[in-house]
Image: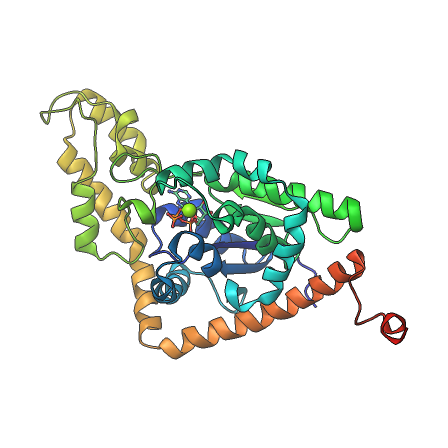
Length: 338
Ligand code: ATP
Ligand code: MG
């Protein structure tokens, strides 16, 4: 039996994964998969909270996200990849946790607030408002210690920590209090210069984009709006392309900033250098993707065996939870006999 500490992290199957996911979370998962017993959740139930009108779309994206994981370098021999709805223990735990959270706490959650504004919700469903509770169940169903996520997830991890502390105090120590693991690039800007590259905002470079698409997208990326002519001095600090150089071209980043400030490099050249860098970065992923695309059966097997492993872990946790909460009627033969 593995004595390693556990990681739980994942994504909503609401579209293809992009560079923001890679630097915000995937990279850490790949780095840590040897050291930790890693569980990666494809959060289809959480995707329903904003896409309940088109469940068929979620199903398509489940496969897509699994393929993105494998292409990115998540190793199914080391990491358990599973589908949230197929692990009923998570739903069960969500119900118990719902007693440990107040509506007021959820309404004050800044990520819930900004997402509700993004989706233009006048009113929120119970499921949407409560998704941080379900996420607490995702994280703890396997008694995870560490959660590699982007910055927008911090309020949710804090909510999970509160639930766990309350549970442990009230019923007994069942769960470790999980910690967020935020990467160096906790939020990658979008191609439009908007705060966050996001699947839902149409401002992303996808891990599955081909060379030409990457070039076209970078050509259209927002740069310093004050810079009109090639030799105008620019301000890299307000330039999206420069933000990407910092992440994907750290060796040349400082020199490029200097040349931009002096007006000795134009935006077209600067974008060309970045395009090559990002294409080099994505190339090994394209190769792995091609391998798995030819073998769709393998993806299915990986997911099914991941689900099986996750259910076993969930059952272990639920046995502890039921015992701690004294809702263990099965074990209590005396109760039923009376
Ligand atoms: P959606 O718009 O459907 O919510 P999303 O792009 O926000 O999609 P999620 O599936 O909600 O993606 O998030 C998955 C993980 O990726 C989370 O840990 C999140 O913090 C991280 N993440 C998403 N976008 C970025 C980004 N631009 N920079 C850094 N991390 C990100
Ligand atoms: Mg999101």
